[in-house]
Amino acid sequence: MKIPALIMAGGQGKRFSAEIEKPLAAFLGKPLIDWVLEAVKSSSKVSNFYIVTSPHTPKTESKCLKEGLNVIRTDGKNYHEDLKQAIVYKRLYQPVLTLSSDLPALKGVFLDYVISKYEECGKPALTVLVPVEKCMEIGIVTTSTYPHLGKLYAVSGINIIDGSKVFQEEMEQEVLVYDGIEAAININSFEDLVNAEKYILNLRTKF
Image (tube, rainbow, N blue to C red; front, side):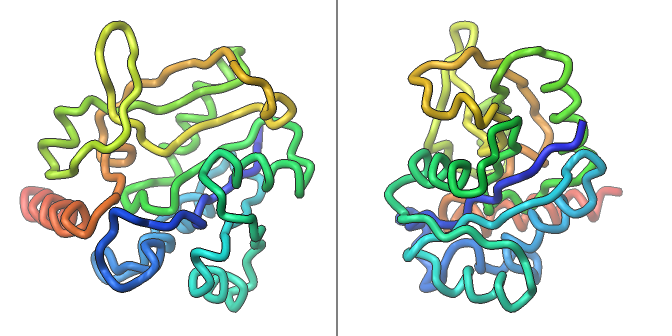
């Protein structure tokens, strides 16, 4: 199975205090969104991808257009409305991988793993959750949580959804709990970025 991906890059980034659009903030020398693009391009299970922008991220949109990438501009109301708008605009009425543009530790092989798990589960949706303790270990403040089996987990920003069911109020969902950095490093603030860089650099010195 190969599926399309939507890289969500149209948020206001209210928690990101730096004077730059969050997708363009440098992480270990490269814009956050570039790390996500590299992961998507190297995945063997992603057929094609689109960057979803909005009036909140004109510089991100300009960069992606200059690089010849497929861009979908949405109204920028909120994450879920932008997602629906993008799916309808491109008629993606099939399984779609959705990714935040602030996941700099993503790897193509991990995306392949997630898509394989989606294939196996037989449900219309899958979400990747991260133990809050892992985020704390890295120095990332958890801002969005999801309950699973009596425990709260951090939302990773990595999901697969059947686009044909995007307007349903409720959808059966598989939960994939994963404690690796690929999902755990989700940058919401400048402090998250600094702490995650330190964590990665420390890992590199150990191996």
